[in-house]
Amino acid sequence: MQTPAETLGVERCEEGRGCTAAETPASAAQAGVPPAPGGGITVEVVRVVKKWNISSEGVADAIAKMLRSYGGSYIVLFHYTTWGSCRVTKFLVMNVDGSYLPDGEWVDNSSNKNANKWKIMLLEEFISKYAGRELLAYCYVSPSCNKSKQFSFRAVFRVVKAG
Image 1 (tube, rainbow, N blue to C red):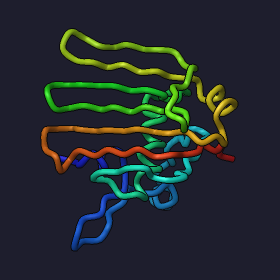
Image 2: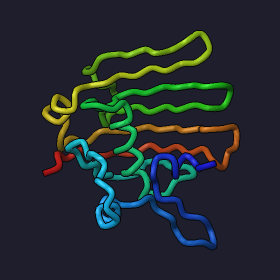
Image 3: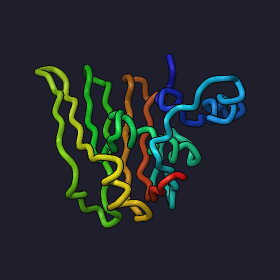
Image 4: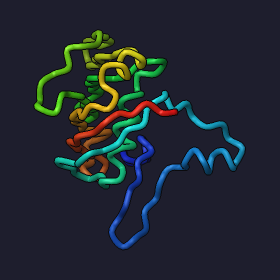
Protein backbone atom coordinates (compact mmCIF):
# COMPACT_ATOMS: atom_id res chain seq x y z
CA MET A 1 0.00 0.00 0.00
CA GLN A 2 1.26 3.47 -0.86
CA THR A 3 1.81 6.22 1.65
CA PRO A 4 -0.26 9.39 1.17
CA ALA A 5 2.82 11.21 -0.02
CA GLU A 6 3.41 8.51 -2.64
CA THR A 7 -0.27 8.58 -3.61
CA LEU A 8 0.03 12.31 -4.35
CA GLY A 9 3.39 11.74 -6.06
CA VAL A 10 5.23 13.68 -3.37
CA GLU A 11 8.86 13.06 -2.56
CA ARG A 12 9.26 10.94 0.58
CA CYS A 13 12.48 10.82 2.62
CA GLU A 14 13.16 8.21 5.26
CA GLU A 15 15.89 8.29 7.86
CA GLY A 16 18.92 6.24 6.85
CA ARG A 17 17.66 5.90 3.28
CA GLY A 18 17.65 8.10 0.22
CA CYS A 19 14.69 10.03 -1.05
CA THR A 20 12.29 8.53 -3.54
CA ALA A 21 10.41 10.76 -5.91
CA ALA A 22 7.63 10.24 -8.38
CA GLU A 23 8.60 10.15 -12.04
CA THR A 24 9.12 13.64 -13.42
CA PRO A 25 7.52 14.74 -16.69
CA ALA A 26 10.99 14.97 -18.28
CA SER A 27 11.88 11.37 -17.43
CA ALA A 28 8.39 10.22 -18.47
CA ALA A 29 8.86 11.89 -21.86
CA GLN A 30 12.20 10.13 -22.28
CA ALA A 31 10.49 6.81 -21.53
CA GLY A 32 7.91 7.54 -24.25
CA VAL A 33 5.05 8.30 -21.86
CA PRO A 34 3.00 11.40 -22.70
CA PRO A 35 3.27 14.05 -19.97
CA ALA A 36 0.31 14.62 -17.67
CA PRO A 37 -1.62 17.83 -18.34
CA GLY A 38 -0.08 20.59 -16.25
CA GLY A 39 -3.22 22.65 -16.08
CA GLY A 40 -1.41 25.83 -17.05
CA ILE A 41 -0.22 26.67 -13.52
CA THR A 42 2.92 26.32 -11.45
CA VAL A 43 2.91 26.38 -7.65
CA GLU A 44 5.71 28.19 -5.81
CA VAL A 45 5.90 27.75 -2.05
CA VAL A 46 6.84 31.01 -0.32
CA ARG A 47 7.19 29.44 3.13
CA VAL A 48 6.06 26.34 4.97
CA VAL A 49 4.34 27.44 8.18
CA LYS A 50 3.87 23.94 9.62
CA LYS A 51 4.36 20.41 8.35
CA TRP A 52 4.02 16.90 9.67
CA ASN A 53 5.18 13.67 8.02
CA ILE A 54 5.99 15.32 4.65
CA SER A 55 9.19 16.90 3.33
CA SER A 56 9.32 20.64 2.71
CA GLU A 57 10.20 19.97 -0.93
CA GLY A 58 7.08 17.82 -1.36
CA VAL A 59 4.65 20.51 -0.22
CA ALA A 60 4.57 22.33 -3.60
CA ASP A 61 3.76 19.09 -5.44
CA ALA A 62 1.05 18.22 -2.92
CA ILE A 63 -0.55 21.68 -3.29
CA ALA A 64 -0.45 21.45 -7.09
CA LYS A 65 -2.06 18.00 -7.08
CA MET A 66 -4.75 19.01 -4.57
CA LEU A 67 -5.56 22.17 -6.57
CA ARG A 68 -6.11 20.03 -9.69
CA SER A 69 -7.76 17.06 -7.90
CA TYR A 70 -11.33 17.78 -9.09
CA GLY A 71 -10.31 17.32 -12.71
CA GLY A 72 -11.28 19.08 -15.89
CA SER A 73 -10.59 22.79 -16.04
CA TYR A 74 -11.29 23.43 -12.35
CA ILE A 75 -9.22 24.52 -9.37
CA VAL A 76 -10.14 23.22 -5.91
CA LEU A 77 -10.49 25.87 -3.18
CA PHE A 78 -11.95 23.47 -0.59
CA HIS A 79 -12.15 19.69 -0.42
CA TYR A 80 -13.44 17.58 2.44
CA THR A 81 -13.85 13.81 2.13
CA THR A 82 -14.43 11.11 4.71
CA TRP A 83 -14.70 7.41 4.08
CA GLY A 84 -14.97 5.11 7.07
CA SER A 85 -13.70 6.12 10.48
CA CYS A 86 -10.09 7.03 9.64
CA ARG A 87 -9.95 8.00 5.95
CA VAL A 88 -10.09 11.77 5.73
CA THR A 89 -8.92 14.40 3.25
CA LYS A 90 -9.11 18.09 4.12
CA PHE A 91 -7.77 20.80 1.84
CA LEU A 92 -8.46 24.53 2.08
CA VAL A 93 -7.13 27.57 0.21
CA MET A 94 -7.42 30.94 1.99
CA ASN A 95 -6.05 34.46 1.82
CA VAL A 96 -2.78 34.90 3.73
CA ASP A 97 -4.62 36.73 6.54
CA GLY A 98 -6.78 33.61 7.10
CA SER A 99 -9.96 34.92 5.48
CA TYR A 100 -11.87 32.69 3.10
CA LEU A 101 -11.87 33.22 -0.65
CA PRO A 102 -15.35 34.45 -1.66
CA ASP A 103 -15.26 32.89 -5.13
CA GLY A 104 -16.19 29.45 -6.41
CA GLU A 105 -19.19 27.16 -6.43
CA TRP A 106 -20.05 24.36 -4.03
CA VAL A 107 -20.41 20.74 -5.12
CA ASP A 108 -21.73 18.25 -2.54
CA ASN A 109 -21.53 14.57 -3.49
CA SER A 110 -22.01 13.33 0.08
CA SER A 111 -24.02 10.27 1.06
CA ASN A 112 -25.60 9.20 4.35
CA LYS A 113 -22.32 7.58 5.44
CA ASN A 114 -19.57 9.59 3.76
CA ALA A 115 -18.81 13.27 3.15
CA ASN A 116 -17.50 14.45 -0.22
CA LYS A 117 -17.66 18.24 -0.53
CA TRP A 118 -15.85 20.54 -2.94
CA LYS A 119 -15.60 24.26 -3.63
CA ILE A 120 -14.34 24.67 -7.17
CA MET A 121 -13.52 27.51 -9.51
CA LEU A 122 -12.75 27.61 -13.24
CA LEU A 123 -9.01 27.58 -13.94
CA GLU A 124 -9.02 30.71 -16.12
CA GLU A 125 -11.02 32.67 -13.53
CA PHE A 126 -8.64 31.53 -10.77
CA ILE A 127 -5.60 32.58 -12.80
CA SER A 128 -7.06 36.00 -13.59
CA LYS A 129 -7.93 36.72 -9.93
CA TYR A 130 -5.19 34.98 -7.95
CA ALA A 131 -2.10 34.47 -10.14
CA GLY A 132 0.91 36.00 -8.43
CA ARG A 133 -0.92 36.60 -5.12
CA GLU A 134 0.18 34.87 -1.95
CA LEU A 135 -2.39 32.38 -0.65
CA LEU A 136 -2.45 30.02 2.33
CA ALA A 137 -3.05 26.28 1.89
CA TYR A 138 -4.01 23.88 4.66
CA CYS A 139 -3.95 20.15 3.97
CA TYR A 140 -4.54 17.03 6.09
CA VAL A 141 -4.58 13.58 4.49
CA SER A 142 -5.30 10.37 6.40
CA PRO A 143 -5.69 7.37 4.06
CA SER A 144 -5.92 4.98 7.03
CA CYS A 145 -5.73 4.80 10.83
CA ASN A 146 -1.98 4.20 10.53
CA LYS A 147 -0.28 7.42 11.73
CA SER A 148 2.80 6.80 9.57
CA LYS A 149 0.69 7.18 6.41
CA GLN A 150 -0.95 10.45 7.45
CA PHE A 151 0.47 13.90 6.72
CA SER A 152 -0.48 17.54 7.05
CA PHE A 153 0.90 20.97 6.29
CA ARG A 154 0.11 24.66 6.20
CA ALA A 155 2.02 26.73 3.67
CA VAL A 156 1.99 30.12 1.98
CA PHE A 157 2.15 29.69 -1.77
CA ARG A 158 1.87 31.59 -5.04
CA VAL A 159 0.35 30.35 -8.30
CA VAL A 160 2.04 31.39 -11.54
CA LYS A 161 0.56 30.83 -14.99
CA ALA A 162 2.74 28.35 -16.89
CA GLY A 163 3.94 29.20 -20.37
